[in-house]
Amino acid sequence: MEQYIIKGGKPLKGEVEIGGAKNAALGILAAAVMTDDDVIIENLPDVRDINVLLEAIGEIGAEVKRIDRHTVKINGGNIKEVSVDDEYIRKIRASYYFIGALLGKYKKAQVPLPGGCNIGSRPIDQHIKGFRALGAKVSIERGAVIASAETLSCAHIYFDVVSVGATINVMMAAAMAEGRTILENAAKEPHIVDVANFLNSMGANIKGAGTDTIRITGVKRLHGTEYSIIPDQIEAGTFMCMAAATRGDVLIKNVIPKHLESISAKLIEMGNEVIEYDEAVRVIGAKYQRHTDIKTLPYPGFPTDMQPQMAVSLALAEGSSMVTESIFENRFKYVDELARMGGNIKVEGNVAVIDGIEGFTGATVNAPDLRAGAALVIAGLCADGFTVVEEIGYIQRGYECFEEKIKGIGGAIEKVDSEKAARKFMLKVS
Ligand code: UD1
Image (cartoon, rainbow, N blue to C red; front, side):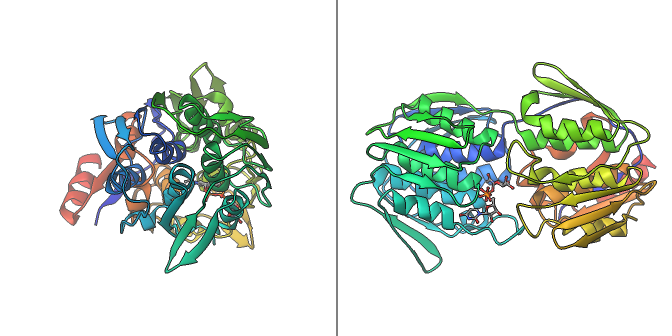
């Protein structure tokens, strides 16, 4: 089993380049099959979730051609199968985007109920509510969502909760429905805007993405396009926290600073310096950092996907911080792992109270999910001695070349798959 072994205690310094946004790419790849023409997608992150989705796209009959590591050409002209069933696709959350894409284009879809990180109960009732409002019949049979419609017609849909997935999914189906659909209480995340821009570049007519009201005038046909995915807000935020927590100085390149404002604001409140450039941010970690409180909220609030990484930073700040998780109920599983490293965090319901400590000590810990796994790597980079992070498959789902990028800014980290390799690394860095 692969694991990361980390020797901590060194401030990270240098430059790191951020890749394309995984969560935008997942929506965009699914939407790419909605035209029969060629679609070229650039700045695609080479991570496991994306590669699984590409495989599934190939399996339903679309042509998928890798032009290079970060560019793919997709042609959905020969899709014969509207039933997506791949043993891996069940494991990724974004498999549900095939429902909106295939229902929009072919007026039918059959997709297994999604899996993904176990961070909460993650229902899809809002997606189904939206599809039904557009006139589709939707049922759940033998673990799959089955949706079909004679025709999809416009609707005025009010989402009961702000959901990234439901907003993107229903927006895709409505892009090829008849008439003008209005989505109210829509999510406003940068990747919603990116998927809408992508669909518009294929000839869709979507207005208002990035606000809570999205207006979609359906079109009969979408055409080919070339599109470059936005930078990953969460990968960037993870490196920002890494720079701050290790008391380092890192220039994080290829980012949209506006998307990082909530993270920058919290790091600044803690006493760190964040300098914004046009397409980069530089984070200079302060030696003494102060406590602060965070509450996760839909964009532009503090992202739930950054909660564990920020909690690790707060665990090394002076005083008590309160972290309130208001999106997913199961996102504090890393707390027990941090306790093995000396972390002093108490969880009560959806609130974690963090009492800052002077430093972590290295230990063997388990990555409970993608973002919590990244947070434990940050903790390892700050810790005294060696830390082993197990179950790193989770981390590889969403971070491309994570260990290489960390090495590039001076971190002592190695991906190993045997005791022998671990010992070799320990000897090398000791
Ligand atoms: C997406 C992201 C995930 C991120 C999350 C919140 C992808 C592939 N994943 O997940 O990384 O953590 O947004 O920013 O983009 N809900 C319902 N009914 C629904 C849908 C959602 O009650 O039909 C609830 C969820 O349980 C959760 C909240 O709404 O409490 C937000 O979920 P949502 O925004 O849909 O998250 P995902 O799209 O699954």
